Image 1: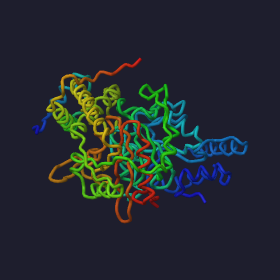
Image 2 (image 1 turned 60 degrees about the vertical axis):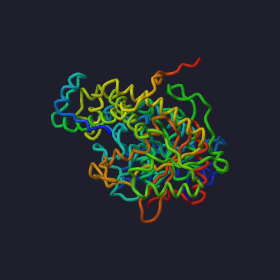
Image 3 (image 1 turned 180 degrees about the vertical axis):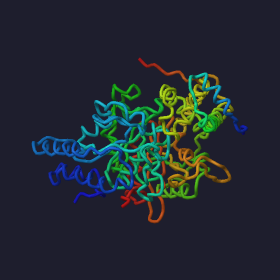
Image 4 (image 1 turned 90 degrees about the horizontal axis):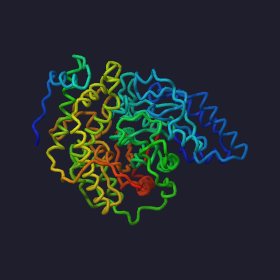
Length: 463
Length: 62
């Protein structure tokens, strides 16, 4: 019986074994989307007939004795920042809705389809990926399946909500400053931000060229690994994509964590956060026996540098539209991009120089540690329309912007991170970041698999 | 610790003109607030003494 709770791996096994038709799996996902999306607003486009036709093609290949791939018949969806052939790539905007339809799929979408997965739709997001809340003015807010009065997080809010709500078992999102990890934590699902350059960004609208990442969301570690294995690897169409051979993380899940050096990030990563966010790290650390604490030097300045680089690269990309049609931007995004366009070039270069220094210091930390633990967000999901600022430990901080306080110092130096979910009855979910050295996703999967097997983390469907 | 950065609507108007942007009057206060936030981040970086050899140049491998 395939239903909303079935893992991608189980779906693929059943389809590949001929026990279930891909068409029935996809039809089930389309029925759940039709039933629940009006309440969640996770999808901005649903590819009904086309998805069923793709599923039929999988079934025909199986009947002919072909291998349709390791994700045969698994329904998935992608943030509408990804090109999907035949759809205008909205990027959460009104401006891009007037663009012609994409003529080919983004690389990551194409790779999942080549692995047998079936694309069923495109997902809501913050305009141009420049936000943490998916309270999109043009397309409405995406609601958190764990509590629909609350945000799903962003900018890949639809990607997290669709998985948490059981609409699909797999989605794709992007992460520059936390846009996979933040919504994964707030919705209570697994999210992977791979090493910069691990997954092609070809066919994805940029926010900040120098640290945009593509990655998957899932409710099971094995599903996350299977999706990562399918999408990772070199791509000449992405000039920043590494030429290193792709990893095979699905084979790492049973290796356990013996011999891994685990530590908790202190300092910046233990301040200005609610008790539940810090308690989650303590709980995960205790389960793993991680007693050591380390500091990433000047992490608060690293966050500042990430903000400056994002602002400069983002405003540079959108400058012509800011000049010609600023009124068509989402006001929440427009005013930030306009401000960013006024920064001097020296600020950008100062931030880039700091980035080089900080990357070298953090590399030294990872000579002594394999996996570092830190909170994903400083608190649980705020209410939709929450006040602009929140007071914590006597300090007034932006309610939405502060959601990235622990993710930003990591992604702008390209480190791979999995956000693992802690979901318990009667409470909103929280996430913990598992962080490793560049190109060492495999150790993250080993730790995440152990935590999931021990019941410390997990992502039940929010019904 | 840095002093809060102050940016006025007039600052925004003047800077915007230099980069060819027209910022609607009703947006200037919000833009000024966001720019102050970004400049505070820049100040945080300026206050940190980076070693002289640190540079942002890319590396070209054969």
